[in-house]
Amino acid sequence: MNPKEYKIILTGSMDAGKTTAIGAISEIAPIKTDVATTDGLSNQKQTTTVALDYGEITLEGGDRLRLYGTPGQKRFAFMWEVLSRGALGLVILVDNCAADPLRDLADYLDTFKDLIEQSGVVIGVSRTEIAAHPNIDEYYEFLRGRNQSYPLFAVDVRRKEDVVMLLQVLFTSIEAKGADPVSSSAAGYV
Amino acid sequence: MLYLRSLGLTEDETDTLLKILDRLQGKTAACWQYSESERVTAVLFDPQVEGSANLRQLTADGAIPIRIAREDADSGIPTGSGLCLDAPIRVMNLRDVLDAVSVQHSVFKKYYFAAALRDLLHPGAGALRYRISCGGSPSLTLAPKDRTYSWPHGIELLDQFLTQPVTVERAADEPAAIDVRPLDELLWFVGSRSGHGEALPWVELNEPYQLLRWPSMAALRGVPGWPRLAALWFARPCTLRDMLIISGFPRGEVIDFLNACLMCQHARAVQSAAVNQPAQAGKPNPDPRFSKIRTRLGIADGASLGHESERV
Image (cartoon, rainbow over all chains, first blue to last red; front, side):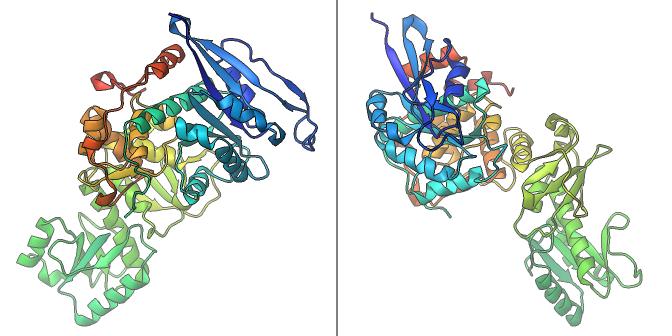
């Protein structure tokens, strides 16, 4: 039997830690495609990912999990749809030090709407130790305001255990969704 | 909500009591209301009715007695084996006695620390900081409005707080200690360990619950099956009974998880109409693709939690 290939997408704002997250679990050194920042953000970061970050993990039977980090800059948005085809799920990383992290989150949720509906998403908020606001409750409130509810955590993507837990939550969420043929999104709280 | 009743007080004293109770709204550790019910949290009684059938019945039903002290003028705090309140009734004296009652009430409920935390975190609780101690251990400082606590040791050393009576005092509004930690860490620890597989007294197991948000990563790492329970309860509201069917997990593990989620206010009861029938939701089997990745990353799958799961 031919080995199978699986794909997980990591996306999010610049400096949210996509490359670091891939490096935390990839068995090969992440392939980076960083070049000088050119779109007015050079005061924030000298280089950024213009195409992809890539890492991989070999699974039982020679199967392979490919990890793709997508561009943080909006001018590369055209690539995202192509990249997300056939993906197992999506990890969104939000940099809490960004100017408007809630807006960033909304942008990524909108952009990857189809992938999220077809599979699932988990959201990691990084650098909360530096910028305390918005806090996690405010993120959940923001999602509720959009009539959405997704798993969301404060994470330190430098820690392998945090990145692994993001994937575990992504998988269990997708499996739980599959177990529920009737939408329960309209629960009324008492 | 805790309930106070009076027995043997004059009309004027009862009027004063009601007015002061009204003034104390939001200023006591727990929320108090006057009631003439037969089942109340505390009964404020005149020494003349001591030994009466009414008082005996109320205390037999769990009411904590508070004696009006008409002669001893300098006390408003627990004395001897009981509580007393100076007459005439003063606002701050009543507040202190009611706070003492709410802690004693928690102790009577067996779940000392969990019950005390629940009372102190009630929106009506007034103080900015509380000092909680247990036996001869160092005290823990709780700052409910900041959602923080401070404790000089590792959280595991709070274990004795879970099995012994605790004492709660209002603390001065001091500057935040250096070792301030997020309150949710404490609430999760206490919520997941106090019940030992049984529901905390205020948790109604027949209610359908749903997770409003996921527990923190540190909390989820406690037991291999908890991410799966969180996913299931986040996806749909359901009762304990339904969750046991859907998840196949041991009852004790599920109850500990629910206790912790409710303690942290990560979960809430929902209206029954929003609940799917369990028959409509199939048991989620692990996706074989994810199972391969989990194996490679050393993640416990949590689907076959059974009795083999252990807290880490």
